[in-house]
Image (cartoon, rainbow, N blue to C red; front, side, top):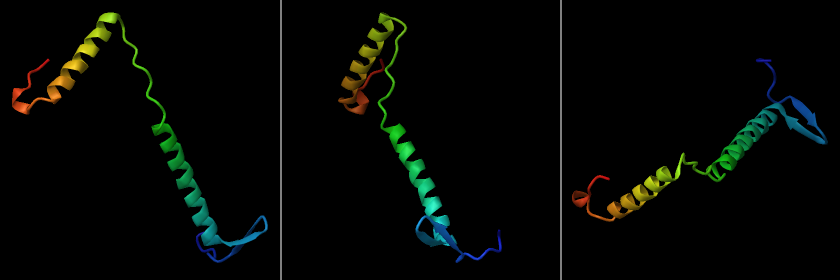
Amino acid sequence: MAGADPFEIYNVGPLRIPRYKLALYVIFGYVGVTTAVIQYKKRQPPTPIKFDGPEEEDYVKRYIKHMSAEAKKPELLRRPF
């Protein structure tokens, strides 16, 4: 297999494709499918956050509100939550 002729012709359907081009098409196809699957998974909406109770949900909402307000202040005037 290692010493095979790269210009050997393969019949794929009605096409006659050299061995090196066929290998290139297979590699491009694999990379394309892999990239498409990764991009598809990236674009899925995130899973919803499940809280253990209403107090935890309230804490997270207060924390987000506090941090968004603190982000608008200059860095030296910010205070911890």
